[in-house]
Image 1 (spheres, helix red, strand yellow):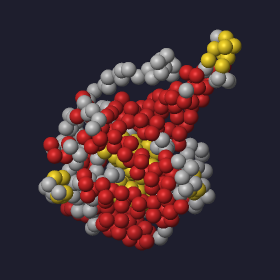
Image 2 (cartoon, one colour; image 1 turned 180 degrees about the horizontal axis):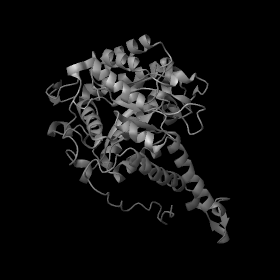
Image 3 (cartoon, one colour; image 1 turned 180 degrees about the vertical axis):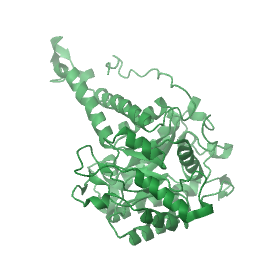
Length: 431
């Protein structure tokens, strides 16, 4: 059952509304800006957005506010880009892109990305580093999302059966955060048991959904297999039939999870493949999603929703997909598309272009085309090449926002140019 906006969670003398995530005077004190005493001005201080439901506000969403945003996406035929991040620099690029496109964004961490965020110098026994890294990243997102003035869904990506202790640790962190703030630390988690028998997949997901629903967390579950390779999971040799979900399976999943809560999405397989290389004979078949929606509506009869889209679908393996296939899927209930391969390349490409542009200044600490004794510090300052990666990623995400019809969603208009951002006293480089 969806958390009600009328339900109050009491913590000492304070009252919070865990499902709504609105910006009442009591709740505004619980923003990250309020918690840590940093300025919250201009768009950061907005109660809501002109074009979105009133519950949707700047910062991380969960509970009812998150559901209202996802419902708005489905009703208006757009999907929100979901970007895998491994650093604060990548997160900031996503937030910058969201504001530039006047739109929401989903920021997500994989287990490997979480471990990297925590640092490869930290032992990962019992997923210690992956848990700590994801929690650290969550607090960074919470702090900066408000400052950029955009709504963010904070998610974790593929969690196979062996990785369940990782998500257990993150759900526990959300439960502790909920006790103080009336909302979870994260917005949602993906449980990926697509390699297990469907009955086991559904039963484990139901158990997690029961726990997660109590604090306003959404569950994303996967049916079928996403081909290709990502984050150490290699499905390049899986049978072709595994890459296509059946309407009966999608209905079974919908029916079982709906009996627990409506706070779930389904990553159904319709030929999706991670990466941009040729997937053999596999091709995208978005019509699978349309057929499944029709099948479920037939099962529901008069209880079917008016828009005939009972399931909220997630598009995995979207990198390199034909724009026509992407946009067809939006009309079939896709409200989220994962983007990883393309943004990995865009970040690296930005650094590569920077190195090429300033190559002769990057061969030593001293000495460049301007003279043997000229210093090169401002060229090899890591802020310069990392910023080049960010700028190129923002540019690539603008294409994703356009492909997903997810531009000018918030109603804020164009972002004003940031001021006083040159950095080192000698000025930043033109990247």
